[in-house]
Length: 390
Image (cartoon, rainbow, N blue to C red; front, side, top):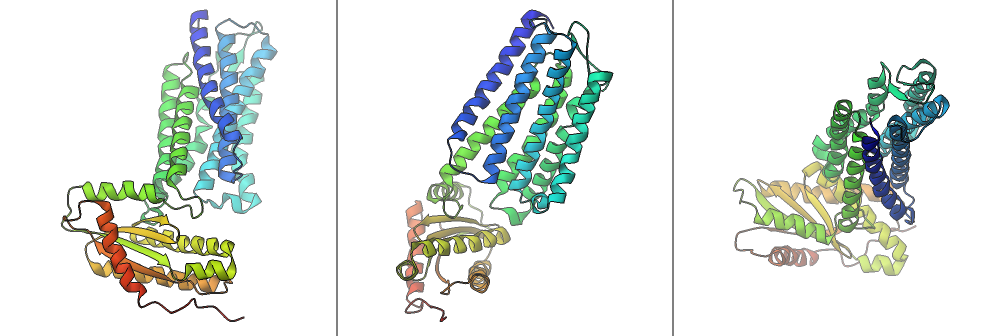
């Protein structure tokens, strides 16, 4: 690598650091302390450190920065070690989203970190043996016979968790988080392509660039989810429901399946708030959303919070029997929730339903038809909130 190539190499790395740095700064001000976000920020930080040392080793290899053997070995070791740490943190981030059992026991965490420790040891030994990289007395860095291993081993973490995410994305029960699992799976494919390109173009910072672009895309997707997810129930919000339903109504009509809209609200929600406080009212909404998420996973349906205590399910099926089964399942899960939670009242919902037809040109017409059915159902609900005697 000559000095001109070294400057281009450094500029590309610097651009990656700038992009990831901006994301980190924006996320640093967030008061959200969920483990998922913490792991994502740590992954970003590790990639920034990796890219910084990749920049430094690039400058050394091109002769722009002169160093001795000690400085060269240290920069190479820290580059590979930080890359391994970034891959491991991504593994933890992805597994956390997938609700992996890794986090349930300390033993599982210990086992998961062992490959990283072995990798760091290999990099440390390479400083003496030159297996992965070697540094001459005047600081010139060259690749060792095991350089491919040094480059590919950390991606083992990425590939394992991406494969798991791919399996979950294909599982109909995970309909609610399907897109998120798909993104995690695609990241593994990008990683494989990155390794191949990096081996072909040794004098180009392919790995930092590809990983930075992938992380930027995931960050943008995450921001989009914030806009489309209800903060209390973590369900799709009204805007996301409108987008989804619009796509379904504008598609080519599928004569074999009917498009149904089910609208529901909590029975006597105002009484829950008035009698037990708004905190308990929020808990009631969360309990209902949990039941709806399970139902949508089982029936491959779409659920959203429409507003207040109103929720909407969009369901495609060949017959109304399946719709009735879905309704029944919602009621069963709420009954199950009452048994599991020490609640001072019984949770129930009223559900209205309408089937889309070609005369319904606009979404409000479709919702109004279901809302009209909901009004009729409400006439048969209990006269007051069913409070459990203590």
